[in-house]
Image 1 (cartoon, one colour):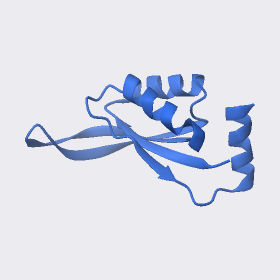
Image 2 (cartoon, rainbow, N blue to C red):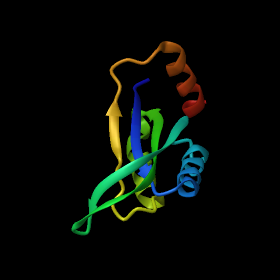
Image 3 (cartoon, one colour):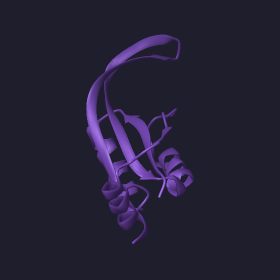
Image 4 (cartoon, rainbow, N blue to C red):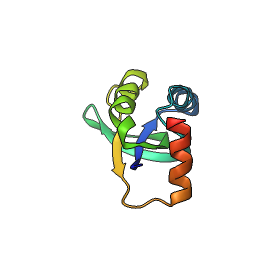
Length: 104
């Protein structure tokens, strides 16, 4: 199994939890880690500041396109960050657990 992480951000806990739960129910991910952080970014010609929820999604490479499409569909941001992180190595036990969750 070829594991990947996908990183995205949300404007608040409610939207992050709602989308993550839907992704879990669709079996597109096995797990998500969520953390609140401060963000500064350009938007519509000016610098914005605020809190965001950073979410690290864990899945298998064969789920990448479906996960990306689901995030585009469900995400509240007009321009969401959807970054795929390919993993070089992952411990066997965790990889086997991911395979059992995603593939039965």
